[in-house]
Length: 154
Image (cartoon, rainbow, N blue to C red; front, side, top):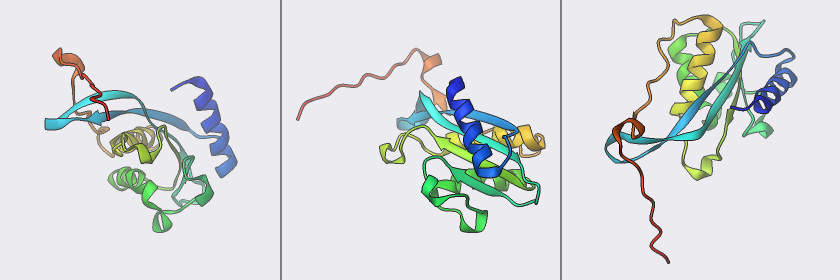
């Protein structure tokens, strides 16, 4: 994640919640292949998080900004991965801003990267009570295998 993206997320978080985030975490995505293998992607999800002074939990998506800030009872589909991490961590009031770096329509991000980034941010905020961040799948990098893409024409 580049410094400009971190500054941008911090400014958006402050605009949405009135104070800067306590942490910003990033997790890379992975392209799932057959038999549980994955190819790591340079893109993934970034999550900015901070404490909520009133004890409530709220979420804001840079990808779905028109929906504004949502709370768990009103959360949309885009918030499902964040809610998975929040439920596992049983975190008290938390503000979350999430940015998935690829459009959902591409189908390359599975949600695991969003759960991982949210878990890391919650661990920074509230300690390690939620367990470790989700483990990555079986990557090809250490196996000597590679992916060959061939276009066969139309």
